[in-house]
Amino acid sequence: MSSRISHVRPQRLNETLLLEASLALTLAFFCFVFLFFRGHPLADLPSTPLSLEEPQAIEVVPQVQPRMKETVVEQPARRFAPIQPVDDLPLAEPEKTLLPAPSTELPLPPPPPLVAESEPVPFFSLEVEPELIGGLQALYSRIVYPEFARRAGVEGQALIAFVLGKDGVPREFEILAERPPQLEFGKAAIEALSGVRFTPGMQRDRLVEVRMQQAVRFQLQN
Image (cartoon, rainbow, N blue to C red; front, top):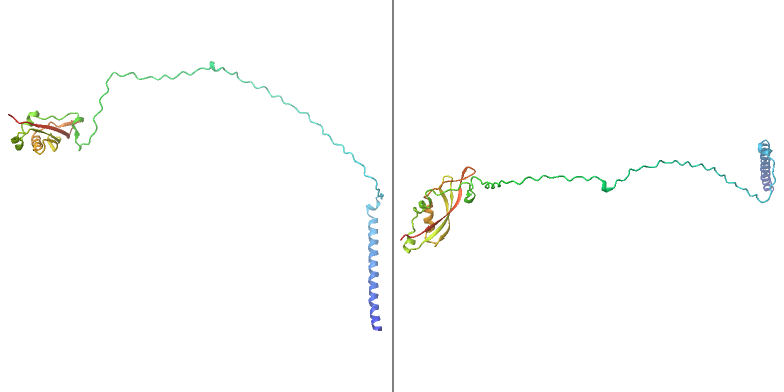
């Protein structure tokens, strides 16, 4: 029992010493603060008691700025040119176009169409047309009347197309028509034409081949 009491007393003694030390430190702190604020300028300010009176209304006077005088700059009046009436405006003279005087000369005929040298020229478009040498008499003097038609007493006619060369010799014969048919009137006409000669045709001062047609009539002599 005594051991327990001896153990509790030192513990209480420690707590008492700790409490006294705390009080001493607190007192020292307050003394330091008092001494510090005593020498500060704020300590000389008079203390004013607090009053619970109503706050006074503060009148705010608005500051009126002086108005600056506006300076008006007068602009010079614009001068406009007088408007000229439309009727007085000068009118541009119309351009005169000179028409050519009518020509009294007759227009020249158009030149014949150009044809390749290797292509025969149609008879109607030649500048110089070929002519049968000796006339139709030379042609009919060479006609041999078909024997079967002569015995039957039949007359007829044939239309032959051919190409006349640059030398005036006809070639490339073709029977276009034969009446009556199958009596060899066309064959007899070709044999007669192959024995005659023509003057050659000319185009632009050059000899050319010509496509021609020749009708041959067969008649019996009494």
